[in-house]
Image 1 (cartoon, rainbow, N blue to C red):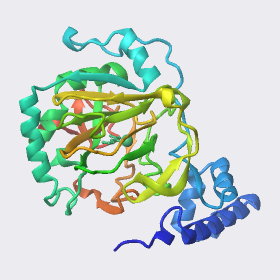
Image 2: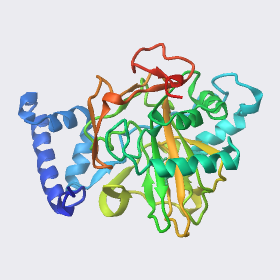
Image 3: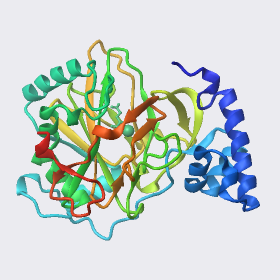
Image 4: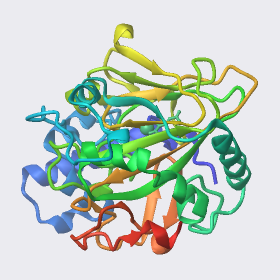
Length: 361
Ligand SMILES: O=C(O)CCC(=O)C(=O)O
Ligand SMILES: [Fe+2]
């Protein structure tokens, strides 16, 4: 069922209802009323995870202004040395790691032959319209848990050895996503993410890193078609990783799937870096870097997929979360067949009931 526009984030009724609810929350906080006054679970979660700054800004702007995600920024590292020793073929120089922090991404590198990726892309495109056996409906998420060839792609040492140098020796993949931009496909608006509170309707974070001022998550983005300026390759705002999470406004004409929003900051055109990529290349970035992509104005596809990685010390979907309700996708995901997957080293923490990738690959 499609939610009417007025009830969607930025819509008139949405703003009316949520602003009133937040004023009520402010009153409860001011008078230090017992939590029982927060009537519904949703409000109790918001009380737990929203700072006073977030609630006040939301109310002041009548239900439109929010941070892009939980507010946090990485601190400048003490040094730019790789976190692990790896095979020289995959070694990153200190200069490259410094550039990663400055630009917010590591420049694309070759992993596969073009033909290999072409072949995989065809399989992925066909599979994406079929029911996803992990979630029971057609979903672009977590196909790595049902396609052994997908799992083998994301565990290639050219990728995992680079990730380890940035994040540490033990790595978990907690999700993957297909991004299909057909001919005429629209843009992906400027966005960034930290703990995925925005995705969970701003109710609660999905991942809990031990220290939010460290680098705690990386995304690997892989085009199955050459990604060009014309078909909507990735673009980044230089410097935005270290500036941390910024504020946005709900509403407008573009956003991400079901939720429309736009930056509450000026984008300096000189700070935008486009990242065209060949088929067979991969790119590593931090989701805290502001990024997006332009529309596909060609008559060919731009198929891509990504996966996201944390160290085992970061708890994902804690407390055996049974359902994940994605505000952006407008779906409820039954998590009973979901698993965090160890793609390098081992998980000694036991926080995530991790499964080794070989079980799927
Ligand atoms: O594929 C795109 O255009 C956007 C990808 C993206 O935002 C991501 O991988 O986090
Ligand atoms: Fe993204």
